Image 1 (cartoon, helix red, strand yellow):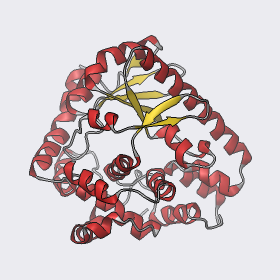
Image 2 (spheres, helix red, strand yellow):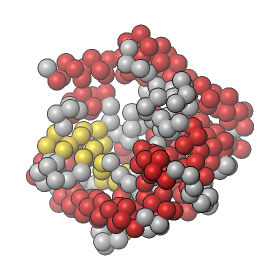
Image 3 (cartoon, helix red, strand yellow):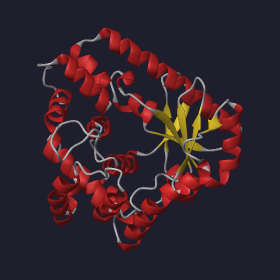
Image 4 (cartoon, helix red, strand yellow):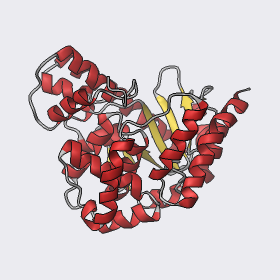
Length: 333
């Protein structure tokens, strides 16, 4: 593996191979390695479909049905508690953009609520048999982050968001996104609310950048969104990106979509000078991560401030990055 990469990332040639197949190229070469790469990158479903692997597809379908069941259970519990919510990513996204829906894998379920409703939502979640995660203390994440994490003996991990995210020194208020959300009827007949397509594009682009695009799944979600939503309101997306101070991260994802996926994003044409800067910055952050040492982490955080949208966001990002691990360890004592 190249020195610029590590265990967090696939080697570039394996990543390129996955992207080519996701874009329609036939599978070839070492199929065992291909399956392993697809599992690592979160695209095991689409690659199994390309390989005609019926056994893997059956497992994917069972996993999707399990996720669908728990989205419905949690949603109905929040409905009974009179807590409005929307569901981020995961199972509903698979049902919107993937064909068949179970091709989209998920590692947890993400629900966004108004922070004022957190006590009622917390009680409803506990009544389902969930317990607050011991490894990710809720007090810490709610204070500095954006969610509380819950575990269940037989259900998927649950993240209850009180803010959309806490990326790059930004913690957007949940309420505007809840108000602008749209309904989606799931394949089992239950209706949830989800981000509108414009908000979803910004969210997915920033989220993928926060993880340095280390899973092809997160970028592929955006490719499929663009395919299914050809008439996005790009001026509205530009306004939202600016208001959230997310220009660097969103445009870095646009640059990656263009350079690695050959997928042009109209947003780039609205801000050509910003987009050129993102193209220049992309190679230095594409495989960027810290190695665990305190000094390197500080240097890494300084470098990462280039992804923040302004001086206030840079300061918040540094404070969060330096204090969160300390506060987390203190809360765990």
